[in-house]
Image 1 (cartoon, rainbow, N blue to C red):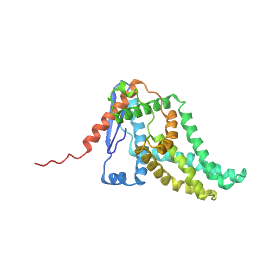
Image 2 (cartoon, helix red, strand yellow):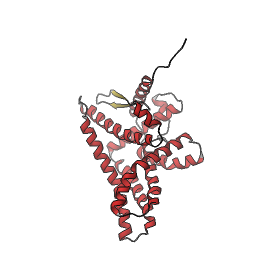
Image 3 (tube, rainbow, N blue to C red):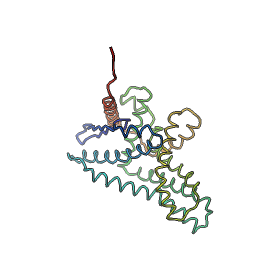
Image 4 (cartoon, helix red, strand yellow):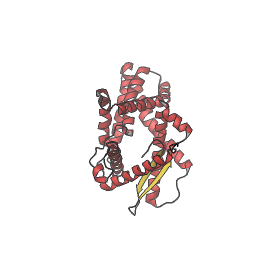
Length: 281
């Protein structure tokens, strides 16, 4: 669970205890980035990657019964490798396929950006669906659903109890899945406007434009979440919510308990990170 100033990670240990670790995220530079349009999306993306890697290693360490945390160099290496594979698979490979379709299949150049976007979208959805067939990832998706249900219960003002949370939907408009799908759809428009390019220039442009596409995607998601009842927002949110049918599963009660423990720890950390209110008299 990530908030504005803190994050919390909860893990059920082999002895069935729920262990929680919190981390404060606040700093003057981060606060400035969080208020700056477009730059805040890049900060959130980096946080999601870094905190995700740390969360996975924390969970693995607890399950293995290890006391020592993974060192920073190993975390950085894991993050760089993950980013490199992701960029190669979801950005460079579709661009290469589109370029080959122009040269070898005779597709018109005006359709290259659209075709590239479709390849990227198919890869994204196919990858999410394929890994969801693995039992371990299916459990991750179930915990993902428990996280969303807990947030939905909180935002609806319901009692933060396991039985009450279980009645809420697994989809949430500010999900990371929504971010990935929005990036894929925006890339169709943006890369299509660029037009045909030589292969190396095309690949380089895709890498250089990743921050721009990510920033635009975050601002669009932020805008739709502010007006969830507007017809245009519902139209834009529909594909994102539909994709969460793949990235979430109905959680077990024990999973909701873990999500609730993380949320409570996050709320406590958020409150403690705020400066005390001044008083007079």
